[in-house]
Image 1 (tube, rainbow, N blue to C red):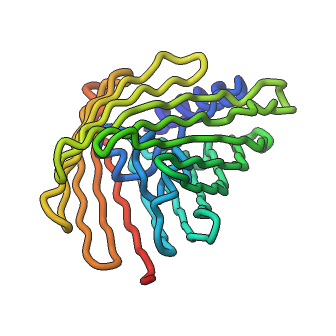
Image 2: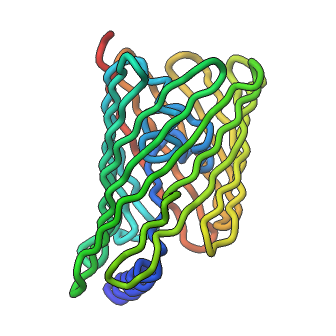
Length: 268
């Protein structure tokens, strides 16, 4: 297993030196639906589509841990949202990797809504660390939007790293990514999702998913992603100020990966 970890770290180091960072994924609700982030409007929008923050109504805290296909591929994150008179402010911390290679990101995001739409912006400080290499840092900016075209149909899109900063140590740039998707409300309980994710220099990821809310306490989710090919599922439990979410994904070659998230909302 040490050989595997070393090989993986070498690949990640190579990727980072060519401006290719790991695309963060913590956010258990979205993960259970097949990594649906464009139209998901929970607190984890701090890390994904910042426009989704606009539905945060009270001071809210959340944390999640994603056990990757290997320990060296695990992710952790923590986010906080604070409603303001002029929108919602969000702060997030994210970590990927292990002692051989890791990525640490500090996010600060803001979202506001007007009419049928919401807009969000995010600034991120990214740090890449690899054993026996100097740490490198970059500041990136992202922007996103969500609009409810009808009472049933919602569209969302966001672009990460729009400034594509240059890493001075090697002259390469941090690559941008585009995410766009739709959400369709078939009933008060069932929501359908479709999304496309495109990173520079990579093949697009096509996703589909659904969420079914049995009642105000229990929900079930499932999804499918193509490239990588994986089947997702998840469920959630909500009671009072607490929210517990679980999500998992099965890759035919790499195996099973899972994520657990906790959220707490203060009373208004």
